[in-house]
Every structure is written in C-alpha cells, then in structure tokens.
Image 1 (cartoon, rainbow, N blue to C red):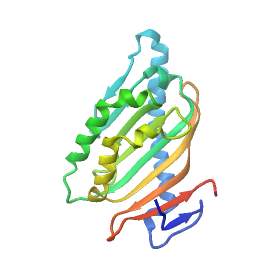
Image 2: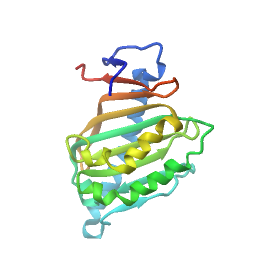
Image 3: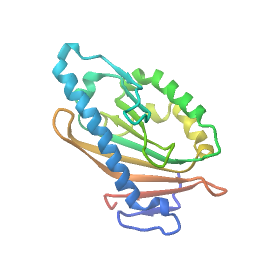
Image 4: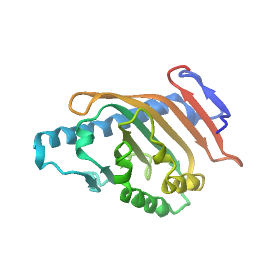
Length: 213
C-alpha cells in the first residue's frame, strides 16, 4: 500500500479533515468503553469458574435499542488475557447503499470465529453508535503481538475489504495495544491509524503514527 500522506502525532492535514487526530481520540474512548464492557463480563465469568460458558455469541440490543454483536471464541482465553493487541474500525457509511451484504459477511465471520480463536482472536465486538445514525464502532482483540495473518488473509475478510469503497465514504482503522489484564485494569493505546478515502476517482491512503516513528 502506497500512502499519499504519512503523519506524525500532531500533524494536521487540512484538505483531509477526517484524518484529524481528534477523531482517533474520540474513537479510542469508544474502544475503551467497549473494552470495559468486555472486562466486566470477563470478571463475572472468572467468578463463575466451571459454570462460565466456553464461548459466547451475544446479539442483544442495549436499553436504547442499539445493536450489539459480541463474539468470544474462548471465554477462558479472554478471562486470562493480558498485554494484548487491539484493532478498531470506524467508517462513514454511504446513505444510498444497501448494507445488508456487509451484515451477511459479518454473519459468515461469526461462523468462523472458532478457527480465528485458534490463532489468537480473543473477541469481536461491533456496536451501533449513538451518532451519527447508522454508524458502528468495531473493536477486535487479539492475544498475539500483531494481527494474525490468518485473520486478514481470510476470504470473508478479503471480500469485506473489496466492498468497502462502495459502502463507505471514509474509514479509519486503528491499531494499538492493551496494557494490563482483563482481571485487573486495562487501557488501550493506539499506535497508528490508517486512513482510507473513497470519495475521489482513486482511493486515497494515509497513515498516522502516534509513536512518532
């Protein structure tokens, strides 16, 4: 991938306001909220001991009716997780497109979660955001130091990537690490954000390194 811009932690790109670092800060807050929701569940399951489920697929809406999807291939692995990897996905969806195909691909991913768990996937969490309407935040946790190759090379993931330009105006993809553990306190730190802009004739790619390198 060739980046049209590589930014440091404080650089501003006026012609691409969606790359503003404030967006990452706001979305890290969403990711941290999602992480805390999972941590609360993990601590409850730790107390349940042998009565805890082996794996989990939760699709219940919250009190405000917002869609939540949480998939955990191995509850034990999540409970024991410490010092792991986090990926966050946030996009601006197109209003004039039927997004059902993306939800269908997500359902296929859910069916494959056990195989991803074998290579390091801890959880997949997708939540409908309060605003703008129809937008979602996605948090994926891995026990490995980086995203397993099996995850992004899978045909379902590749199909979703190929459809992205037709379903989103822009995408921010965050990669970071989580310090601490699920049974203690844990904090997400984003190390880099990749930017995808599909509004022009050609896709624009950008990168921001928060560690300054």
